[in-house]
Amino acid sequence: MAHSSVQGEGTRPEVRPAQAPGPERPARHGRRRGKRKHRVLRWSAATLAVLILGTGGAGYLYYQHLNGNIRKGERSSGDSKARKTGANAAGQTPLNILLIGSDSRNSDENVKLGGSRDDRGTPPRGDVQMLIHLSADRKSAAMVSIPRDTRVAIPKCQDPDTGEKFPATNTIITNSLARGGAGCTLATWQNLTGVYIDHWMTIDFAGVVRMADAIGGVNVCVRQNVWDRPTASVPGGSGLKMRAGTHKVEGKEALQWLRTRHAWGSDLMRARAQHMYLNSMMRTLTKQNVFTDTPRLMDLAEAATKSLKVSEEIGTVKKLYDLGTQLKSVPPDRITSVTMPNLEDPEDKNHVVPDAKNADKLWEMLRDDVPLDDKGKASDAKKTPKSQATKAPSASDDRIGVLVQNATATATLGPVSGRAGVLAQELVEKGFTQASKDATAGLSEDRTVVRYPSADLEGDAQRVAKSLGIPLSSVKKSTDVSGVTVVVGADWRTGTAYPKQSAPKAGDLPANSDAINGSDTKQCMPVYPVYQW
Image (cartoon, rainbow, N blue to C red):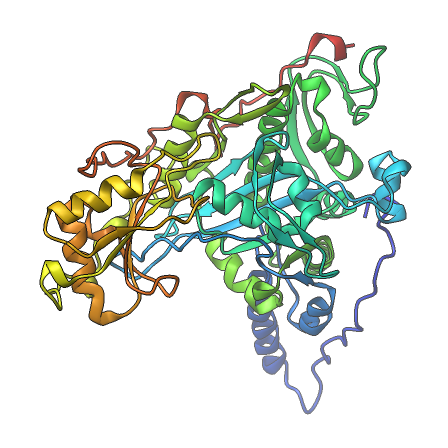
């Protein structure tokens, strides 16, 4: 390790050397042993994930040791109803992982690296929040950032460690981590995007330094000399100081790059710098051969398992291996990094809010597993599976009980008053005389859906959906309802006939999403004039 802050942490179990050939072990056995050892090493190099930051590897002999390094937490600790995207024709589903960079200063290491002792002991905030989306066919991936100062609806959450309960609130998303841990941040993302998130991972300042050291450096570029330092009008700064051009950063300097905000001009530009760093890291690791470099392999394993805290369902080396084998197969030119389209917050110019139209388009692409690059085609995840073919209703229309709920509210728009009543009346006029509205307030769904609780009501739910023009793919079985329920989402705020949806196309991203392709080596950060030297 290159920095004293992380040197000497942990010890590795003793590894006994292979016995030399002798009278009872002919040389030919030694050669086979060497080949077998090479195969084991190649297998072990694949066993621990690229993890999110793109690195991994675990020695087979360290399996239990590495398991002991891994810290775990509850997957979701907030109120969220997001559901998984349906499987495609091959039975595959997308994989979504939330990466959270914590500003925790609750250790000597983090206080030293974070530069603020006043915050020691306070709940950490999630300064970096990035969704890693792996397509169902495992051929493309996306990295999607939400700026930390984005004002959103944070649901009610409960801290899984202390039991403390937090009421729902409307504030910047960085605060979600302090209101119930990573599980609350995950629930906040799910409610905002409608994307089901399978797992989360968090990393703190010290973890970034460990990982950067273990990787051996990542190339980054600045157009002008940069020094992110305190000024007469703006205190703080990451301390990043380098000359114009391309540089390899590791350790503390890598952390400075990822934390720099003032010198780039805004928090939005910081997200771009983070995407550039991670893309460069992916390219670096793709070129590296760690299979036959045992010490390097072990350093990567130690750093990865010590640096990350993960949601409990992936909290073993085996689970991380399964995850890593999926992540590592995507080539850099099929990785797209974007930032959520946003607008200045009308309540506070220092904050932003989602640009509803463009952000919703991005979330729709993720939900429907449409590649963010133009090198692939939309997944067939939206296609109706054979198990959901049209079924006959169990009763005549006038005997089917239907409840209609108004879930038209979004993070930036309130609910449309009276929508449940309007559509309940429309169903009555179509012959569903037992349709009625649900007065429950505060519901929010990105898309309209028809839910039913058991297989015997599937045909009834499909019949109701067909009468309103709702596609069969939006008819879902759910234990959250007791009968056929039409949940009117934010995609249907007017009219009595469900609006036809145009399927998003691969690569058709909103103009203000600041997209970067993972293979682009020409990206170079511009420096805000005040921080040039």
